[in-house]
Image (cartoon, rainbow, N blue to C red):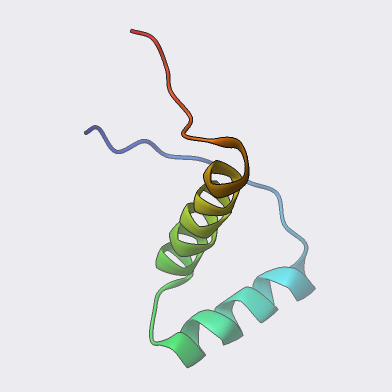
Amino acid sequence: MAIKSLSIRIDNEMLDKLHFVADYEGRSANSQILILIRDCIEKYEKEHGEIKFSK
């Protein structure tokens, strides 16, 4: 699987809070974001079924 880069705009307060939570969990901010995205996708798929793409 290829790793892609994603740029987001985030205000300073939210970014500071993200870093605080990530530090508390012993993770980098990037790893914390990936976990949040994974959890969001799992929740969606639990409610709506697996997301599938045709190739």
